[in-house]
Length: 127
Ligand SMILES: [Zn+2]
Image 1 (tube, protein in one colour):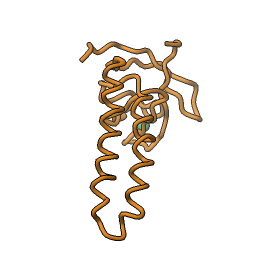
Image 2: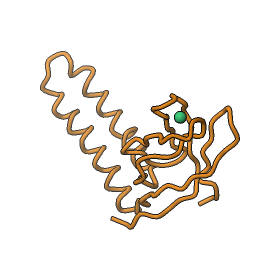
Image 3: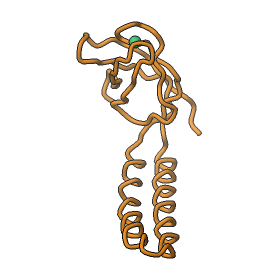
């Protein structure tokens, strides 16, 4: 596990000018990304194997899990960071908007629980 690092972000929502925020993130090393990818692939294909023994449903479940495996693995492999911070200031009401626990990568979609505004966070500088 790598140390959490701060990342400067722009908080964007369609109605207001972007605001700045800083969140703590953990950068996923290539090895950790590969591990996440492999885990999803093994679980999906394991479920496909298990589905072989379910009468009738195996006609749908086996090809479904076989196809879902690479798709889920690709989605998991795209993640480059894991957000450690648990809340960010809402651009509308400035209240604390919760960040979903397994948020990875940018743009990260967020929703304020107080006023219901949805907004996204992207790094302000490239990289
Ligand atoms: Zn709000």
